[in-house]
Amino acid sequence: MPEQPPIALDAVSKAIIEQLQEDGRRSYAAIGKAVGLSEAAVRQRVQRLTDSGVMQIVAVTDPVQVGFKRQAMIGIKCTGDSHALSEELSAIDAIDYVVLTAGSFDVVVEVVCEDDEQLLQILNKQIRSLAGVTSTETLVYLKLVKQQYNWGTR
Image 1 (tube, one colour):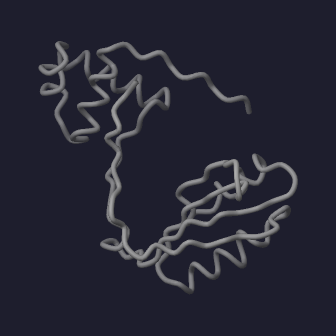
Image 2: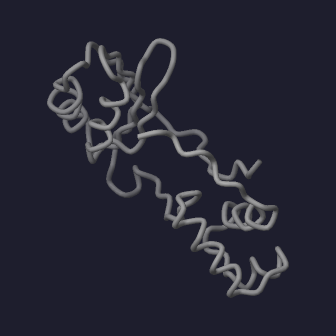
């Protein structure tokens, strides 16, 4: 599937995104006041932005607090089509992040697991068993120090 070009965003749409990055629960009325639109106009723009895939509004949780005691980043080396492999990896429920990379690894994924036993099962039965995977390197998270989603817009 060819990569989609970025959607052109005007200053108002960017301001709406930035408002929601600051507080995803901010009301449409409050956003409207900040950006100079009516509540209904903000609602329509937010719907267009979510429908087009520019943004999503979700509850970001601390995995440890909701029962997932193990997180890890896994670097994967492969032969063949890394894009096809990334699609297969994307279908694994425990994997929440998949990125094609240049450098030491062809693909990097993040997994969120209940415990080390589940991590081992995912590595052995779901990742290393995929065709084309030649090696993996697992970086187990000891402590999440910083995670943010408010990088703004350009």
